[in-house]
Image 1: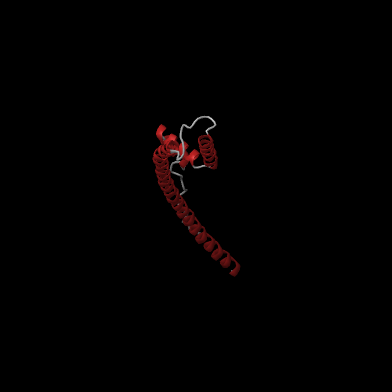
Image 2: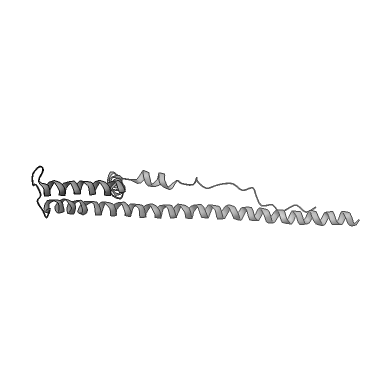
Length: 149
């Protein structure tokens, strides 16, 4: 019988797969954490409802003058406060979105590395299967010769 041409035993020589969340979290600065927190809070229904309630109370108190007209109609102070809020939250939300884009790039790179590892392991598996096919064909041939004699 011919010595079967099996490939050498496969050894895993690559590092562990990285968790994208851990990689990104390790790199966060205080400012990035703050911008993510603000984007999370401002982009929620709780914030929209809370702000709507606050602005409604502001308008009612100033129109009815229950306490004092600190911002009479047309609510110029309220417009100033809302403008300041928009001026500061918009860049913070953009910083958070930019960071999320960076995270997506890291995730794509890690996916690429995993795909390369999987491709090399699949290649080894296919080589092993081909070697097994050769051996099975050889054994089948030997069985036919034994039956024929």
